[in-house]
Amino acid sequence: MSSIANPTPDPDDISRTLAEIERHLIEPTPPTDPPPADLEEAEALGETKRVRQLRAEVAEARHLAALQTDDTPLLLDTAKVRERRKKAHEAARLHLLGQDPAMRAWQAARMRRLLVTGAMVALTLALAWSTAGVQHFAADGAESWSPAWIFAWLVEPFMSIALLVVVGARAYLGTQGQPLNDPKLIRTEYLFLGLTLGMNAWPYLPWTDDDFTLSRLVLHVLGPIVAVAIVTALPIILAAFSRLNYNPDAGLTGLTYSANTGDRVRRTAAEVAPLIERAQVLIATGNLPDHPSASKIQRALHCGMDDARAVRDALAQEAA
Image (cartoon, rainbow, N blue to C red; front, side, top):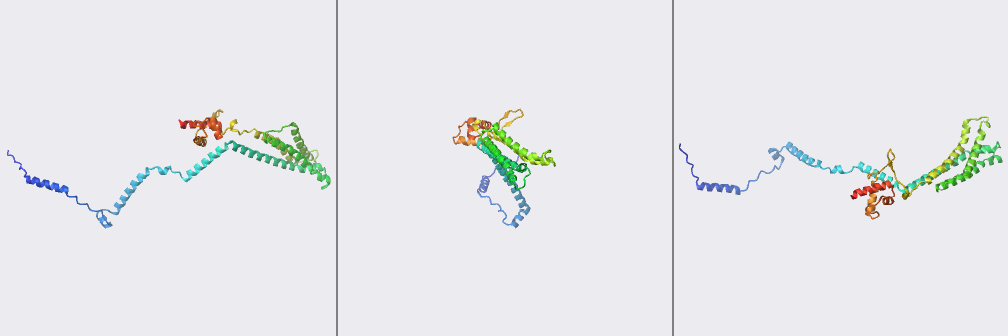
């Protein structure tokens, strides 16, 4: 076989080729066509209205996708949440204030004053109610505006005033923690009440009234019966108020919770959160040591021992 000999390249051709390549690399690349400046030019290049709308939708979708992963708006409280938190905080503060010994003593004093006032008003009205019945008994058929008829109106008032003196003294001393239970005073009370009841009931009993009706009898003895009930109940109520103790060092406690078996349940940190915050402030200001005992917390916060222990345990956990 005959072989075809490869022609040897000319050195000049090689030099020209290399020069062309070098010139091509050195020369700058011609600029591309600028973006269309107007709507007609854009439409001529395929930038139609649909293309621009789709491009805008894609850009908007990318921005929305990036923003939807940000949970910052979800961390903001709405107006309803803030209002609910405000009411919850106010309720917690009122509950804490209600456990303060001074507040509880003030509430008891106000309630005791209200009860004593109501009882004395009711007793006065009950005795005034029986005045007409006593006058009818004391007048004994005297003519109207005669001396006997006029003086008959004074029988019930002077007995009522004497009774109110005894009841008022017992009520006042009961509020001072010194119940007055002398048997002589008690017999004096019931003597006045018995006289009032007897004089109201006697003219309307079956053997003294030809037109006896039970309703008339009950109506006339209602005042004395109410007076007897008030005189009996008021000293007992006041004695109970006098036994209340508001000294935090003597065992005054706040609300406690008991299980069905009667065992005391420890308060949780969430239930005494306001007390924990107050204790932290007192520790920061130096009014409490860094690791206070339950008794010191109780004296500083004026709370119950159960609450003080819960605060102590919560502070210890935070320090750990």
